[in-house]
Length: 338
Image (cartoon, rainbow, N blue to C red; front, side, top):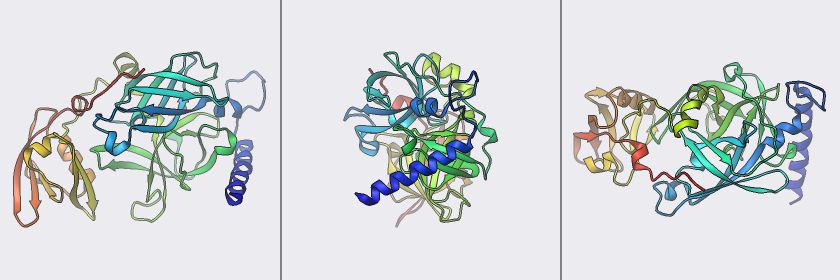
């Protein structure tokens, strides 16, 4: 307990020093810049409840907790999408402990963002969105979560590069930070002017060089939501044509793509793909690694496309399986929540 208290005190001192070095406005002078207090107040605790029959209940749990960042004066808050995916209820908690129910507005798989809106007035000044294109390697920032300055951690942006995830996901120009920040889900990445430049998504083992052992975090850059914001607010998802989805979860082992899990009732499971198979080609084009696989898969068309998937089955050799791509959004059991 003493070690934990000392660590909290140390982080608070460091965060205070970093905030002082940032261009936050300190007290009520007329300015467009945010105060440190404004920023900390705008990062709320988010909790969600997911039905047991939801597609993601086993992998992500039925009770999820993270953070959301208030971005307008009417209680609109931005978070990471997996926290609210298939949720039936969502609550936001302010710094004063006030619990406010929220409506789920949007989920976007391509970026990973989710949006909710508080159903009661929050009385919180929103954080302004910055320009994440300026968040280059070597730049300092603050990772901010619910709980105030004592829970904020100074981080360095150590790289910008495309990121691929085992759930058929590529995020272009992802922000990687160090040191590792454990409370990452929905955390706000704040630049030196007090602007929001990213939303926390994951812990990654190689925040620096892709081949290095340098644990850190991946943040979704805020610029990724700007072109689709109107679509998300209007209809809950982007109008961009969905990628073909085949319901496969892979592990990239030195360029060999091994099937780790299959979506229940998904296209690949129906086509005869099995756990342990090695994916070697898409449409007769060889694949090397996860990112190459997704890009070749997505180039085949959209939902409904028949894809020739080459898989090496242990003890059975190479098989070419016809997989009819589906639509992930239709497979998920989505709820508007509250």
